[in-house]
Length: 91
Image (spheres, one colour):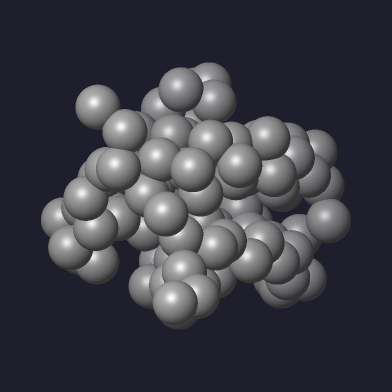
């Protein structure tokens, strides 16, 4: 059985904040895939949004740049567990 595919998008103007958020998502992608047994597709989208917007499967879940990568991981994990009903495979 193929793992569930989840799309994580970073939308916004081409600036440092969007680039940073996109890079952070790429850096935590493998960790999250292993922990939840999913496949994550990461996309970067040009828009007029002043601040970068993080979306998961089309739902906007965060606006702006979290203070650090650790906060980003927690934002994504909370969405995976609370909204998508995913459970961690690794404890």
